[in-house]
Amino acid sequence: MNKDTMTLLSACSKGGLATVVKINATGPLKQRLMSFGLMKGSEVKMLECSPTKSTFEIKVGSVSLALRKEEAALIEVSNVR
Picture 1: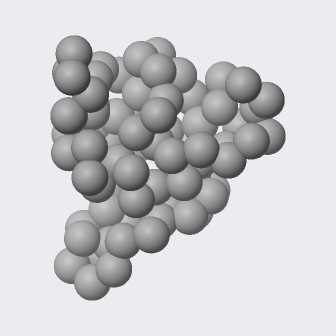
Picture 2 (picture 1 turned 90 degrees about the horizontal axis):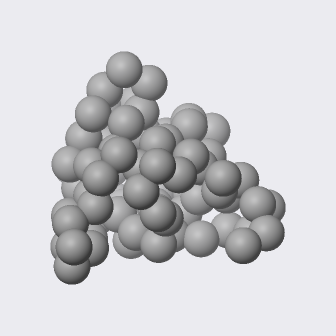
């Protein structure tokens, strides 16, 4: 995958790093994600994903978060490496 190609966080592989480009969530979900440091320009590391890719564990700064597939699919990332 070209590192500059935009993709969804839900498509990233375990151990991958990416930069958040856009969060397509609204209301309380967007506010919750931003309160954990997940915002445009932040670097995200994919720590774990369930075998069925229904849940994801990510790290943003010093914070680890668990996201459902539906939530991870709302986050656009680039510079995937």
